[in-house]
Image (cartoon, rainbow, N blue to C red; front, side, top):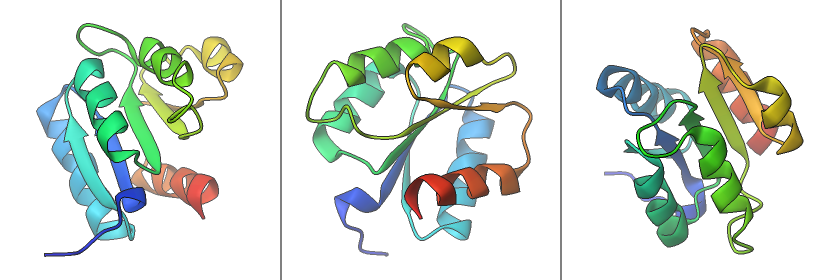
Length: 123
């Protein structure tokens, strides 16, 4: 089992099991980062407070709160408000995301596009 520093973790927030599993597998195979999956915004907030990941990749449409509300709640907490976020959606709210300094990836996207975006943010 790999040993990781907490800052080497990418948090994936995705309520679709198949997409979430695919992203976790791809991140762990194609990047030097550990990847953790949670399925809603409340789990994400709990995980972010505990682990302070280096990056969050979140779906826009989530149960209980959408991806932008998740970003707003995180940005209100000084200890985690600098963690970069990638928002995924078939219909990304680009203007609202830009106001929050959040990058958008439109679904479906190529894995290489996601990996390039991660490299730009963390590399």
